[in-house]
Length: 220
Image (cartoon, rainbow, N blue to C red; front, top):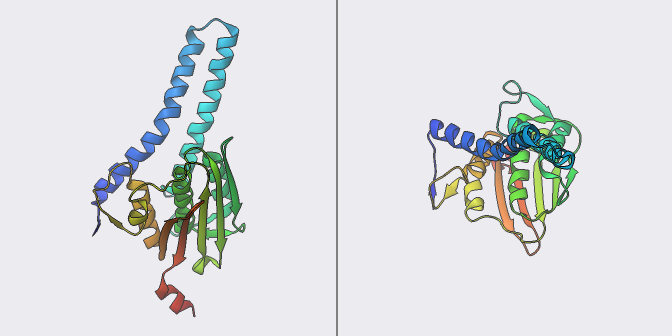
């Protein structure tokens, strides 16, 4: 495997493609629902169309709020972010009738890049349980030396090929719109002076982010 370094323009383009891919489905469903409302006269069908619009609008809003915090600037450079806000956007995107989010993170203002990293790990965990399950998020330590552990458990558990290597900044293939998110998570970890590990155990996927060794030495 080789170390990958993307051109900034390619990174921006692939991230935009990823966000558009996630948002286009609920937006398309909204358009379909509105067309049904415009043409349909049957009250029952109109109620179904209105329900589709409401659910799809909520999903699109959740996707955009999550992307703003996980991928976007979300405040000025160096700003801290309320972990409660991170919990809300993670729950809005991930928690549904199939998936439960168990958020064990102290309510506090945390460095922006560490919040972004935590949300990216949550997203990777959610992709590892396509049929739903439980995602547990734990954070320990002070803000400057915090460690995070995200576990995913559920049926058809699977960490996609190459994700673990990508989180370490390596890959055995070129980065594309499907793999850009774990690659980006590795960049965020680097900016937060943390390292990431990913592994699959018997009944769960475990993602861990820890301070780099040199940071621990400086803190001591």
